[in-house]
Length: 379
Ligand SMILES: NC(=O)c1ccc[n+]([C@@H]2O[C@H](COP(=O)([O-])OP(=O)(O)OC[C@H]3O[C@@H](n4cnc5c(N)ncnc54)[C@H](O)[C@@H]3O)[C@@H](O)[C@H]2O)c1
Image 1 (cartoon, rainbow, N blue to C red):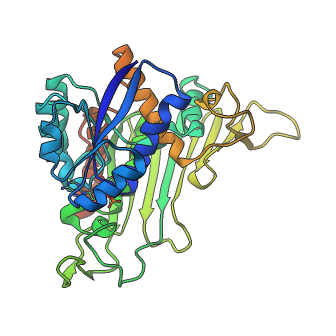
Image 2 (cartoon, protein in one colour):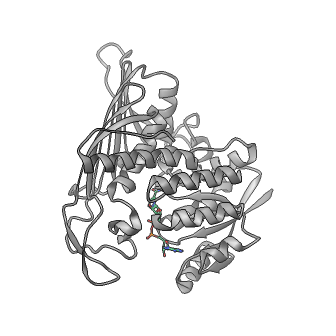
Image 3 (cartoon, rainbow, N blue to C red):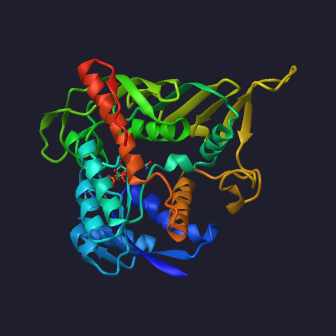
């Protein structure tokens, strides 16, 4: 077994999700490379040390540059907010470290392109944490589409709805609420939530050619948690767009943090000539499937409980009928990444795939600003 020394940057929500995945992966997915939790990096040394003790990291750094400079680190895992992805990734690529980077890849496509070129030039393994691809029901949807079961695809429909920023007293900036500060997040729901929907869509249904979008910022000013002052809100609270895919299908995408009652309602539906698929994050181990070939009085939508050993990833977990959840998508992502390193066949989504999503979100924001249909650049 060969060791792969991990240096994690950021010990928040994703720092926990990734650490859990690195710890569990070899218990469930055997392989030749063993991730080792070598160091965690956060600006607050006390909190970083607490995190290290809880998750079993061997050491702590408070400056990501020092982490990258260490000879005993093989892989940099970027689980910090969007505004630092670029600088960290460029430095890590220069140092020849493998990189796992959280989504969205960057603040804008200019940064994302430079990051993509840097990892490709350095020939280092790279991946973006678009984890929803690896929820077994979503991976099964990909298999059904690739087998041609849906036939020609006409429609793709996705939404990602939340409700946590309706209260105007929610601040911008600072832990957790950095998502409302455009200087840290880049954009609002477009880069945060729709980026997930877009990554899944590009994977399942191919490239997007053009979009027309609208965005809205419902609460115009919020207190900044670091300055204490009311400041203009520059992120999009809600975003909706129409898209034309290269395969001729039409799509609608919608995301908001103002859909009262919805916490993380990510759904997609795909309608093809021979069948349809529907998936819902709140019921993530099920795939809804309609097959037009089904005849007779019992035809209708099937709810497939994706837990059997021949369904994606499930033979490595429990016994048929027993479901897994959100955190397992990260375990699958690490398993596939390590398999890619072992085999020399890199697992997706790579930085170039992350760039493709950033080109779509950029076109969405540009279209919302101009009110015009906007072409999407090809990654
Ligand atoms: N894949 C997903 O489903 C998913 C879900 C949530 C967040 N994300 C992405 O993950 C990233 C982190 O989000 P989060 O929810 O974990 O945020 P978080 O606020 O919970 O944690 C961010 C961490 O980064 C640290 N940090 C900030 N600036 C830093 C710096 N300069 N150096 C070192 N550490 C720094 C913070 O102290 C904190 O520990 C973002 O890019 C976000 O878009 C992805």
